[in-house]
Amino acid sequence: MSALERLVSVVGLEGVPARNPDGSTVGRVLDVVARWGAGVYPPVSGLVVRVGQRRVFVHAEQVRELASTLVVLASAQVDLHDVVRRPGEVLLRQDIVDHQLVDVDGARVVRAADLYLTSVSGGYRLVGVDVGVRTFFRRLGPARWRRRVMPGRVIDWADIASFSPPDAPVRLRSSHARLRELRPGELAELLSDLGRAERHQLLTALPPETSADVLEEMGPRQVSDLLRDAPRVEAADLVARMEPDEAVEALRNLDADDRAEILRVLASEPAAELIGLLEYSKREAGGVMTTRLVRLHASDVVADARAALRDARTHASDIDAVVVLDDHGRLLGDVPLLDLLVAAESVPVRELIGPPWPSTVPPHAPLDQVIRKLIGNRRSSLLVVDDDGQPLGRILADDILDTIVEDRDRRWPWQ
Image (spheres, rainbow, N blue to C red):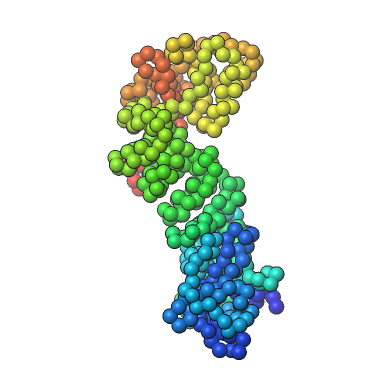
């Protein structure tokens, strides 16, 4: 028997008669039950069979033969108690077919048209998913077509990440290890193609540092949708993973009540910081700045600066220099990373201070002024300082560019 002939269609099994050894019909198959967490290819743990008006569970050990046209049981004895989903079990027809999945190898969202089982070491396992359009059309035909295994575009189940159905007490393979190998941009594209529930599952399954990078790749509106749909505790956790300026942008797009509830759940210190940033308009310097600053005292040496940068490496995209402060926390200078790279570790950072002096703006400076100052000084960022000269945050040229692009898209929505 060829490998193709050994495949059994999950869709094709629906309605197939389950017979006793003597050939009499016990009932008809409704679904296939698989057990998650028992290897890359989930084993079939049993069948859901309609017997009269009942939906009963038939254990895999009671199944002598499983084929696309016939199921033969090992004995005539069947437990007639209504089927109850047990922890770790998934109904393949109900929970997986026609649902969204992630093809990790192809970094794309797919929809299962059919699933394929095959015999492995005396049992049956889920080995592949068919995502072909032809398979969807085949299911529209008579039963004999549905039961015919004619694979279209089949993906190895080892390359699939799936999600939890709403009523299942089991976490499906959304935490697929190979998802961690995808770039943040690829993950962001996957999230944009997923439904809301699946999008939230995938994002919360990622490591915190990865999910923070993915959130930065998404648009503020998409992030706002995630926060709005998520339970408040999980939404607060997502906000905590984000850079403050990105979090503020997403929070601005929420209703006041939703925003207040998330901030209430958030820890007091980050919540206070975000509340302060939300007081600024997005058309002001304070509304587009990041508060992630690496601060050094004038008496610190280059080795101290490098240690501080290592501690802040998860925020590397927001750091292009380190600020140097006096005893009162006032700004003395802004030392580029290249200067710290080439200087000896024992050199005091005060010796690296000098022209060109840092460009600064007050927090309520209008965006037009910020843009003119960035262009005029030809720097990659400028600092936002208060009336006492203490730095509040940094505005990167990239942040200004994102704001300009967002404004253009708002004016010309067809682009």
